[in-house]
Amino acid sequence: MALLEVKDLVVHYGKINALKGVSLKLEQGDFVTLIGANGAGKTTLLGALSGLVHATSGAVSFKGASVFNHTPEAIVAGGISHVPEGRKIFSELSVEENLQAGAYIIQDKARVRDLLERNYQLFPRLKERRKQEGGTLSGGEQQMLAIARGLMSDPDIIFLDEPSLGIAPILVDKIFDFIIQINAMGKTILLVEQNANLALQVARYGYILETGKITREAGCAELREDDAIRRAYLGVTGEA
Image (cartoon, rainbow, N blue to C red; front, side, top):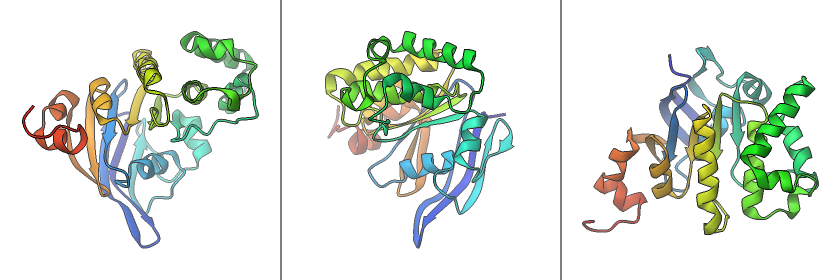
């Protein structure tokens, strides 16, 4: 049984058909990436899976139970976390207050402290800045904070939407090192990333989304060698 399975998911924005029957699945411990051009429907898909966007039809199951069009609160409580595009941290709260906000579903204070310490071990820079307001952090530090906040609910699966967006190139590799570590900890990852070359290097399996439809899926090593994908998404022209 897949950890997360999506079947024929359809989403409309008014008369616009944003997702046209998307199907995908993730097993426990998977690292899967979703590749597509701007406007392909990647963020819409993550929103529908997180309860932020209402789906028209289809099926979404998590741990064998339906979570189709459940509320965001119920989906987080069930074990799914979503780190949105643009980070969306609480700029006037401290780093530690942002992290504690990510654990709002957990009533056990000792467990929250343990999760906080685990995140500080993973992101030492956040520990150094734990009393600093989130809005005063650099773009890379804010992305670390957004990811760490997503981990504070101790999810089984984490959705990452464009984690390299707006970050200095020197910090992008560091952010992805953290993401690889998170997967190594046993967390299942669904990654949406504008840097397709990097995404296909770190993930194990990939789906290509074009105008609301999955047009190709395969292991990432295979996708990196596909000439059409190399030309469309990896910036390769002619023969390599």
